[in-house]
Image (cartoon, rainbow, N blue to C red):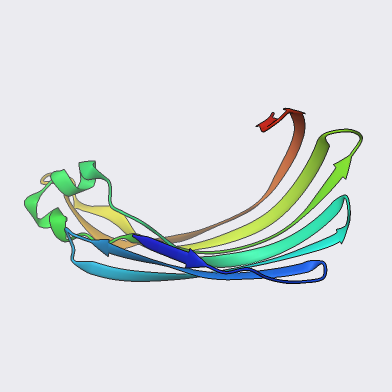
Length: 143
């Protein structure tokens, strides 16, 4: 795998496009995953961001080893988008809220439960909101 990105900053806004290249030896797949992130530092204690991209996950070794034909399984794909906000308050405290959506395809599913054969036929989606309250304890330590 090889990954590269570059960040352009203009005032309180930064834009970071990137791309990752993966080669899967079993399936002989070459995969390119574009990504993009945008950050806006609205004030010293308030940050807003949005981003998205394509992400691949190799099939598990359990799936690959279940049947000799499974060595041709491709990577599972997730196309993701997220938007969030982070607010610092008090001393060393942060709260962040992030909404996200993932469109999943090429998921590895078992096609025959008796012989362990699988194929990249699954698909689905996932959406949600993450809320995190964090505190800096010192140096690089957060909780």
